[in-house]
Amino acid sequence: MKLLEGKTAIITGASRGIGRGIAQVFAAQGANIAFTYSSSVEAANELEKELIALGVKAKGYKSNAASFDEAQKLADDVAAEFGSIDVLVNNAGITKDNLLMRITEEDFDTVIEVNLKSVFNMTKAVQRTMLKQRKGSIINMSSVVGVKGNAGQTNYAASKAGIIGFSKSVALELGSRNIRSNVVAPGFIETEMTAKLDEEVVKGWRAGIPLKRGGTPEDVANVCVFLASDMSAYVTGQTLNVDGGMLT
Image (cartoon, rainbow, N blue to C red; front, side, top):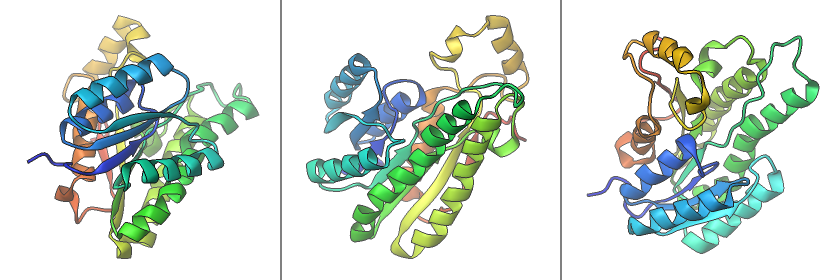
């Protein structure tokens, strides 16, 4: 029995990295996938084909989660096309790192808008469908940086910490309707983005992690499967650190 058989999941920012990994693992577990992407049309088409080949229904939507109206339209389109919205994974995110003294107002605002306001937009957009169904699982992607902070990332840390507070509040508001809200906080996950970093720097990071390796998108995706599935039916308002022991 596949753990997500017959469930429909919306995954934002899924054309690469962690989002892509979540989409692949969810589809392998039987979930129908509606995913969003911002610009990489080719990667999105490729992912759509790959997911359909796993025997599930899948569709990519070009949608900006930071836009309130686009998020609302996306939720309406997915509910009409797929018939239900059982899982929402808010994964879309960006970084614009700099020391506080050098960070511009625009770089602060953009990161908050894409990383944090998108979570509000999407959660509000799917809420109506989930309330009607009287069930749903919302999974919000934070970061170890949102839990402990990081120099040079005030904007990113603020956005990711905000996600944790938002998710706990949603868990309290919607728990009586059997809608769960949890957070996943990944540590150092190796993706095409980190592949561009200096190998010596990466080795140093790995050495500082108790499990002595970077995580994979699949490591994060497997935890998301647990939170999306009925196996976590009594888990809400929690933050799961998927970080190889970094925050221990």
